[in-house]
Image (cartoon, rainbow over all chains, first blue to last red; front, side, top):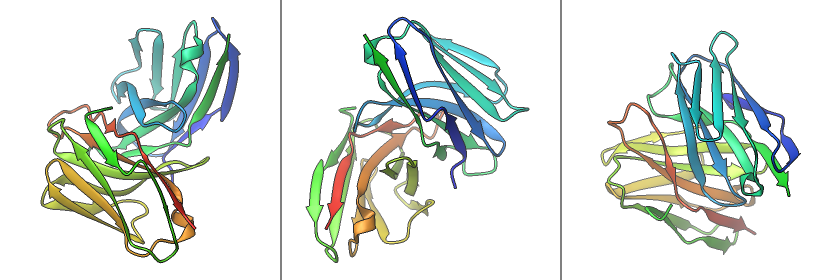
Length: 113
Length: 114
């Protein structure tokens, strides 16, 4: 079974708007990571947030983590057409082998010019 | 990521055939993983290896086997392919010494089993 579940499944926005997607997970984690996948290609790591962190920034990306609610959000600010991709959260469960990730089903984001 | 390569990139095979997917990496990582991706299901872990002598089953290992020939090479075999193994397969690597377990993915192998 999947540890992480993203919401929404799909998101369509215009360039310049912000995109927010959420991830919920089931068990305690060491860290939570977000990856991006352009159509049919390999996943690319975006950002990692540790279980003792609440917020992290990287360029136009902002990630939050609420361990009490077992949820995380990814915000992409001032979106561009190049941000069109699927976004996946992945959790490194504290109860499992360290470094073994479980991925959610992803949020498909379309940014129109 | 050019540091992680997969061959072949596309493969069409018939039910019952044995096929091998290969993964090579030049990142010097000790950990390697095989995933499959199906539409709407995200990635699921098939096998993983934390070093050359360490092989572990993942979430969906039935029908698959692996070989870690060297630190840089990790192969996935389908002993007798079946249509529901049609999927996109990804190899990934990570550095075990890094407390932040970022994984680096290959470009994927698209497999169709007829």
